[in-house]
Amino acid sequence: MPYYEMSLENGREYIYENNFDVAEAAMGLWLIVFLDVDWLGYQTLAEQLWEEGDTIPPECGDQDYIEQWQIGYARKVAEWYWHLKSELSPQHPLLKLLVEQQFHNHFHVALQPDPMYELSPEMQRKLQSECLEYMKLIDKPSESGSQCWVHPDYLREWLRFVAQILHQLHDCQQKLTPLLDRVMHGEDENHDSILSRYYALQKFDLPFQCLVESSYRFLSPQFHITKRRKMYRYDKNKVRYYEDEKLEGHTYMATDALHALTIWEFEMVCAHEIQLRRCAHCNRYFIPYSVVNCYCDRPVEGKNGKTCKDIGAMSKHQQKVNRDEAKKLYRKVCNRIQTAAKRRIVQYPDILRQYKEAQLRGQELLEQVETGQITYEEFQEQFDKTTEELLGIPK
Ligand SMILES: [Zn+2]
Image 1 (cartoon, rainbow, N blue to C red):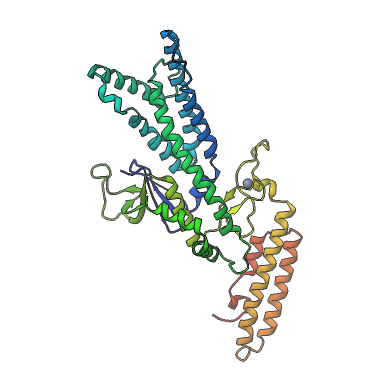
Image 2: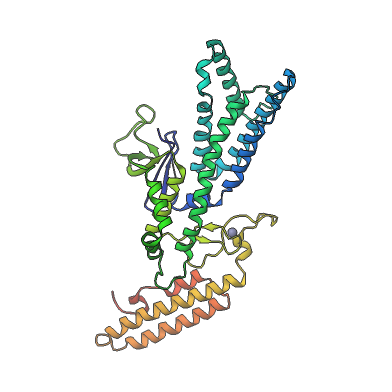
């Protein structure tokens, strides 16, 4: 079973949670969360802990001291895992799968190194029971007084694996960020849409081509039926199927390589021309709900729960964007109805006067946007109507 299965259809992310459930969110959300995570920070922590596991002096003969040290080290590694879980899991279903399944399960793999076969059956049993005890500690942070431990070599093997994955993700983040900036915020006049900027990337950018090619090797498509956000394929006796229930079919990409899945979402976001934008306050990416939405919903530190949007709503930058976008829309609508009016002048001799009136009305509304009386959205709602409505002619 692969750790990750995600479908990107209908502008949505569908993520199989490996427990029958399918989580759903707006397409692009994973990309945003992925770019937000401090992968290098987590990698550094895991590496430091890995190094620390090797610091006990080999000539130290004091068995009690060594035992206490090993218990202390095992405790530190458990705390590191709790920290990782509490910070990452709540942010996105894919992060929960990363920490609570891929990282978690690899602990068992780390406990099966070659020397295991050289151990006596008695020693193997002892090791297994130690491992089970330790797993309980990892899963339940409440067991604070626990003295359980496993040998540092196994813990270090686990840390090495986790650090390796974190490194992969950090590397992917570093490569992806400038590419996303180019596609979402590029100011190249020849390529004025997300899709055309993406096309330029795909056609001329060799590092991008390599990144994509190396990622797709890890992905395999799967087709799954879901109902009520439950995977149908596993539910033999768990969930009863009723004839009238709506089934949904989606193509999923299955993989154990989270970085490859991330590259795939980047491509899908470009292909669907989903606009992601950097917040004008914190500079982090978010999904804007309209062309004038410049600030994200993240709370700003030390501002009593106020978000970037609360802080930015009245800013000069926001007002300028509102004005500029309203002017752009005004010109677009005027051009549209002027062309239509000219074409129908024989049929409706009064139509040019109607056009002038609509234009005047637009100017009034535009002034209201400039003085802040109405928002861009209100302007859009009142002015960006159908040609027939604006010119007072039947459909
Ligand atoms: Zn922000």
